[in-house]
Image 1 (cartoon, rainbow, N blue to C red):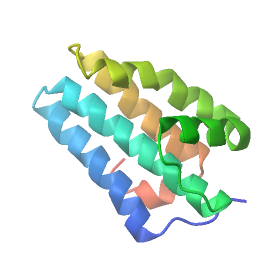
Image 2 (tube, one colour; image 1 turned 45 degrees about the vertical axis):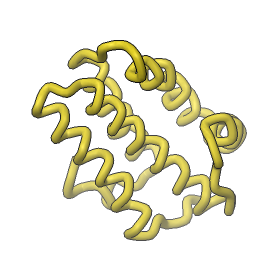
Image 3 (tube, rainbow, N blue to C red; image 1 turned 180 degrees about the horizontal axis):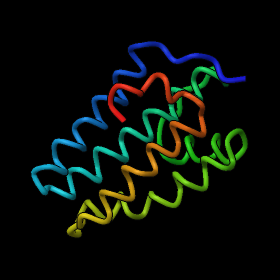
Image 4 (cartoon, helix red, strand yellow; image 1 turned 60 degrees about the vertical axis):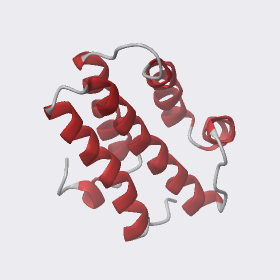
Length: 121
């Protein structure tokens, strides 16, 4: 059973998501993709912390915990990781940002926390 996220935890993911929207509107697709992915990983970290009592220190720990505890969500997040890493040194495009944004929405639904994000989605 999913424990509830605190308002502070929700607001961190919301801030990254809204930053992604701002960057997307300004056609800064690298920054948008980066922000949407950070919204995803902070969301996952908060879910892991709420349910397993652990806070991942890096991507490897996060992926290991997700693979065991959230295998469906792990597939989504790990599939986006290379897209996110490419923003370090390659130009992202509108499609990269859109896909990452949509996957955030999908994860919110899969974690069944839509009500916590209804004001921004």
